Amino acid sequence: MSIPEPHPQAPDDRADVPSRLLAAAAGLFATRGYAGTTIRDVIARAGTNLTAVNYHFGGKEGLYGAGMQRRAGEAEAAHPRH
Image (tube, rainbow, N blue to C red; front, side, top):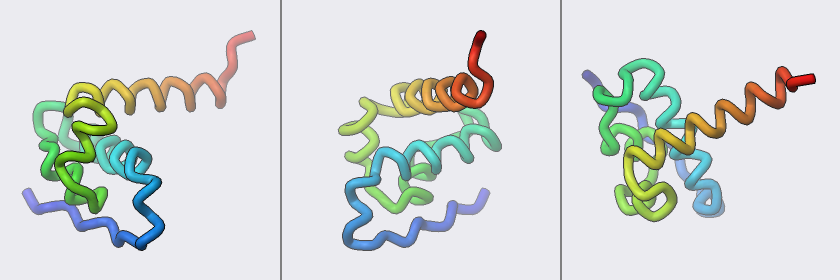
């Protein structure tokens, strides 16, 4: 497996760290699955550091759960229940 390409980080891009982590994780979880995705791959793709995952999500499981909640919210918005 190749290491994901890093996200080019602008100085004012730091505030968007959770969104970058979620986007990076979503792509990796979708292609590699939960077990096949490492936090190191996620942070490399998001252009951040290991402590950011723990700070914002409490670890890999929390990151995965937040991603699932985000997708559920997007699905609900796109297809609201009547």
